[in-house]
Length: 138
Image 1 (tube, one colour):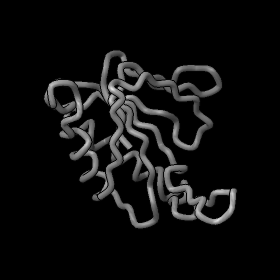
Image 2 (cartoon, one colour):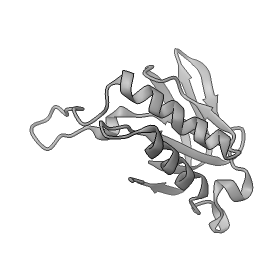
Image 3 (spheres, one colour):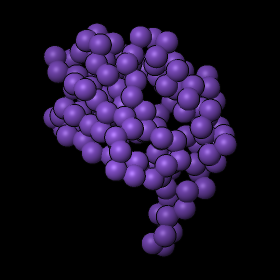
Image 4 (spheres, helix red, strand yellow):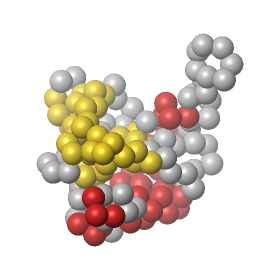
């Protein structure tokens, strides 16, 4: 999920671990069992070139920063009952290297990337610009 953000920050135990220093994109990255580093690189290219900033620009067009947060709960399934299951989310030992590959692909393309802390209990604050939120899947 990609959100156009006027400002955003990620905190762990009250300390800021990643933030946007100017308007950019917040990426909530969910990883499932069949995702790979190649899929992450493809998705990173798509996010970097996605034309959702003002004036139909992409982050790559204007050098906008990105805050990337791992978000396994995007794969939550609550179709049965009231307690979601996260069985579709890849386990941490599989997902973390793919998260790292996604961020590395963005950085290799020239993006300024701030990160959350993989697997941590994070408090994410954001001022959604627009609001604009896009769900991307491969």
